[in-house]
Length: 234
Image (cartoon, rainbow, N blue to C red; front, side, top):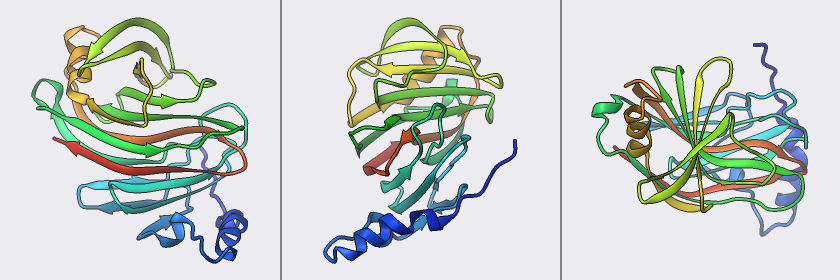
C-alpha cells in the first residue's frame, strides 16, 4: 500500500499558540521525545512508542513520550470515516498462548470529549506475527464499533465483555468490548488469549506484539490523548 508522508509544519499553529501564552507548554514541547513523522518511533528499554498514522485521509499528529508509561498524542484528523492512526506503546512477548504465563496490564488515560471525535482506547495483541489480531476495548465513543459480529458475552479477568468476531481481509480479528467503559483499568491479557484457544476460536499461536493506545478515526480541530500511567506484567 502506498503511504504518504506528513508535514510537521501543519502543527506549527497549535504549538505556537500554546507557547505564546507563556505559562503554558504543550506536552510534546516538554517531552523527552516527540515526533510528527507518519511512522515515528522511539524505543526505551523493552518498549517501543509508535506514531503509526496508517489510515487514508489522515491529518496531522504528534506523539510525545517521557517513558513507556507516560506519553500521549495530539491529533487533528478530519471528521471522516475510517481509522486514521493507532499511536501506541508496544512490547514483544514471543510465547505461545499455552505457555504465556500470567500477562496483565494496567493503564490510566485522559481522553478528550467534544465534537468531531471518534476513537477507541484499546489493546491490540498480535499472534504469529500479524496472522491473528486480538483487540480489547476499554473506552470508546458511541460512533465507532468493532469489526465483525457479536457472538456472546463472557466474563474474563473479573470483568464482563462482549465478544465480537470478524475478518479484515488479511487476518481474523477477535474483539472484546468492556461492558463498563473506563479510563483506568487492569486487563488480564492471558485470560482473553487462553479463552479464545480453549473455545477453539483461535489456534495456540505465539503471542508477539502487545500494544496499547488509541485507534483514532476523527479528532477534528485537534485533541490531546494522554497516557498517565501504563504497566505490563509478563
